[in-house]
Image (cartoon, rainbow, N blue to C red; front, top):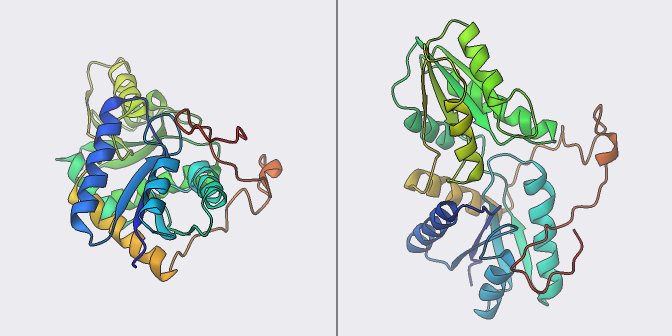
Amino acid sequence: MTPPLLLVGHGTRAAEGVAEFTRFVDRLAARLPVDVAGGFIELSPPPLTDAVAGLYAAGHRRVAAVPLVLVAAGHGKGDIPGALARESGRHPGFSYAYGRPLGPHPGLLTLLAERLGEAGADTAVLLVGRGSTDPDANAEVCKVARLLWEGRGIGAVETAFVSLARPGVAEGLERCRLLGFRQIVVLPYFLFPGVLPDRVASQAREYGHPELEIRTAPVIGDCDGLADLVVERYEEALAGDIRMNCDTCVYRISMPGFEDRVGAPQLPHHHPDDHAHDHVH
């Protein structure tokens, strides 16, 4: 029996984001000749434990889990593996191959460029990531910005974050203005709609320079291009070809200001719909 695909999302309080995730799971289920299930690690149903329980009840004892995250921050490095390890303890004989985060990837860059629309040498793009307390994750967003800039004839691609890291959205827009750009596209680096992408758009509207032409592009969203990438990550996980970069992982090496993270235990999030939760969070 070929291992099924288990899609693991973070979760969102936005109903639109949950619906988009569900449509994406359905897209993969219609496309692949294996069982497909999806669940969240926090905030919204369905919880990951329900997705695993369904696959286990169908007779599966091994799955390939793909984290639906763009960068390997705390969720991808700790919360999701912790939740999967907990499921192994709940279901005798259950095991999993863990895929790598989705970005950076040429397919993602193509999707971002499509969401960007028309942007030439007179346009600045502000790529806005979620933001993290993990410097490695923030650096990944900067790498995506540089890769997006290269070869596309865009005036500039700057980086900002909507939470937990600087520069913020307003700071990023101000940098674009001071560089002389009067046309700016704010490009949210998010998979699906949610509270944080809405906050990005709100902060862009509130920036307060009416002489500038500022528009906010849509998130990546449920689409075939994203499904192509997830299938690639699924096949990598099955083959054991993960190629994770751990050289700058705060859980493995001592980085200035993050020395206490080295060797820290990776624990799952509390999920309100996981009634068998062991309350360790």
